[in-house]
Image 1: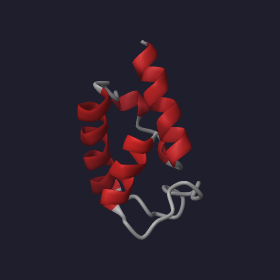
Image 2 (image 1 turned 135 degrees about the vertical axis):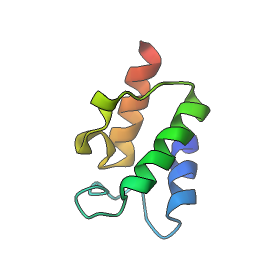
Image 3 (image 1 turned 180 degrees about the vertical axis):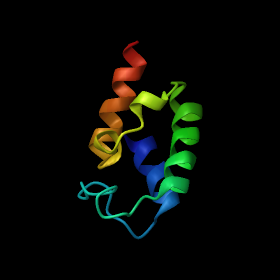
Image 4 (image 1 turned 90 degrees about the horizontal axis):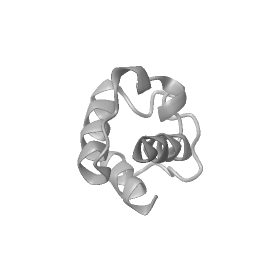
Length: 75
């Protein structure tokens, strides 16, 4: 989770990613951020996020993103 929080903080240092659960709803992360985030996650955690996984529910909070990563690492 620490690696993920570091990736997110690099994108937006001003956001408290541990507390925020409206990253998509409040437009904190835009489409460019999501593309960058997916590339970093794929490289860091050696997982492949598919198009089906790119839905707001999976990216609205750091916790949701982490749950997605954990699911993908189990496969």
